[in-house]
Amino acid sequence: MVRTHHDFTWSGVDVHPYKEDGGTHFKSITRQTLYKGEPTLPVELRYFEIAPGGHSTMERHDHLHVVTVIRGKGQVLVGDEIRPIGLHDVVHVPEQTWHQFQAEADDHLGFLCLVAVDRDRPYRPQAEDLEGLSSHVREFVRV
Ligand code: MN
Image (cartoon, rainbow, N blue to C red):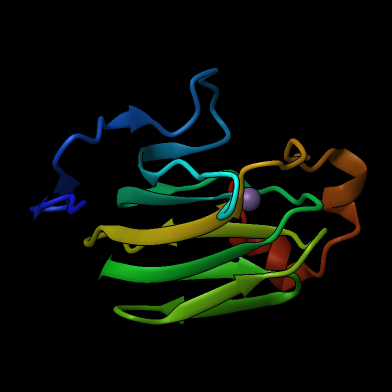
């Protein structure tokens, strides 16, 4: 089976809001689930696209992500590290590691994200978590 690509949409795949419950902890981001998982391959492959100036939720959780950038550029926080990311870069997010993706002000950031079907809910930073961050991380993140 082939899902045909056209301009960062795929045949038979709906474009959804990033998180159905809404909120202000993310901005200008959409989600498409390209693969929903099967018993012998229990992972989801999602495509997220962050519009210029937007960002994903800052969060951590027990499950892992492997992310591959396929559109544009931006920056990522993983743990204590903030790095520029661009086309074809691969980002590994380990368990219980703070992470946030941000698009450039003038460019989209689109990436494939591999994640386990069976996974825990993300945890968002509380005031005491933010106080414990390094100053360079605190200046970077949008919460
Ligand atoms: Mn996450």
